[in-house]
Length: 488
Image 1 (cartoon, rainbow, N blue to C red):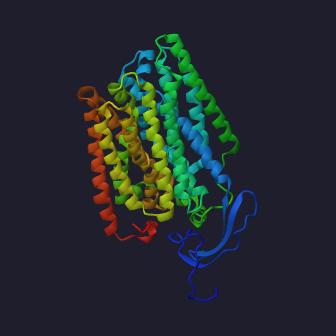
Image 2 (tube, rainbow, N blue to C red):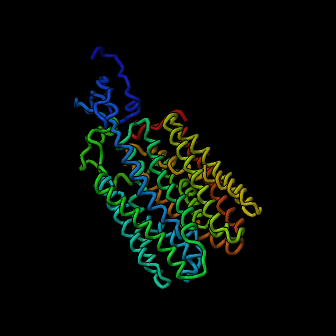
Image 3 (cartoon, helix red, strand yellow):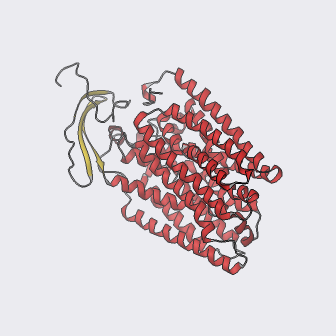
C-alpha cells in the first residue's frame, strides 16, 4: 500500500456498492488489453475479506453474447407455444369440438404449471446451475412439440393438451434464468441490458405466436385441409425445438472460466454448505419492499397475460373475420414492448434509477390500458393498432424492469429465487384475471372486461407510488442487505 489513507480506485463501478467486500485494501488495474478473441478485458484485484488476502482475476468473454442469445432463442420457441392456440381460438374450437374456455386453458396451463413447480426448479437452479436447467428446459420443450405433432386429429385434444403441458413445464425452467445468466456472465455495467435481451427472446416468441399461427392456419371449412395446416405449424415448431436442444447440448456453458465482476468472484467463494435455499426464501418473504414488488409485479404482468390470452376474442367481437389482424395487433403489442424493454434496460444500466423508472412505467401501463379499453370498439382497426402498441410499450416493457428491481431489492440473494417469486405472483394473477375477464366479456362485453383490468392496474400504480417508494425513502439501508441505489 502506498499509504494508510489511500482510497481504493474503482474498476468500472463493479465493487463500488458491493457489501460483501468488507475491507478493500488496494485495487490495481493490471490488464485492460485483449488477450484473446474471447477476452475483452482482464483486471487483477487485490482485496481483503474476512482478513484473508486473495487474488481475483476478472474477465469478460465475447461468448457471453452467444450464451444469452441461445437462451433467448429457446425461450422464444417456448413462449411462441403459449399463445399459438389462443390467437386462433375460434379455429381450434371448431377443429377439436371444444368450448372457448377450454382453449383458453391451453394458455392458462402455462400459468398453472408454473405455480407448484417454481420452488423445486429454483432450488435445482441454485444447486445444479445454468447448464442442467437449460438441458431440462430444452428437452421438455422438444418433447412437447413432438407430442403435438401426433395430436392433429379432432378426437385427440387430450394429446395436444399433454404436449402443451410438457411445454408449460419447460417454461418453469426458463422464466427465472435471464437475471441469473446476466449476473453470471456479464459485467456490472451491462447486467440490465443482458437481462433485457434474455426477456427479449420470450417477448419475441409471444410476438411470433401472435403473428404466425393465423398465417399458417387459415380459417378454412374443410377439416382435412385444416388438419394439414395445423400439422405444418406443429412440424415447424418441433424442428426448431429439436435444433435448439442439440445446440444447448453441444455448446451451452455453465459459467465462464473467470468471473465477470468482483461480486461474482466473491459469490464463488461461498461453499454450497453455507447456502440454504429455505433460509433464502424466508429472508425474501421478510423483505417488505420486495413483498410489495411481488404484489405490484403480479398485478401488472397478470393483466398482460389476460390481454394476450383473450385478444382474439376481443378483436373478433368487434371486427368479425379479422383473425389475421388480431395476430398483427398482438405482434404490435409485443414489438412495442420489446423496444420498451431494451430502452428500460439501457436506461437502468446508465442511471440506476430503479424507483422512478418503475413508477413511471407502471403509471403509463395504466394509462395505456385505459385508452385501449375505450378505443377498441370505435370501429377503426388503425386506432386499435396505435393504442395496443402504446399499451405494449409500457406493459411488456415492465417485465425486465421488475426482474432487475427485484434483484436490487434482494441482493445478495440468488437472482433465480427472486425472479421465481415474481413470476409465481404473475402466474397467479394471470389465471385469476384471465378467468374473470373472460366471464365479464361473455356477460357484459369487452369494455367492462378491460375496465376490470384497469382497476387493478390503478391499484398497482398507487401501491408502487405510495407504499413501496415511501417505505424505501424513509428506511435505513443496512449494508448487509445489498447495494440499493441512492439516485432515486
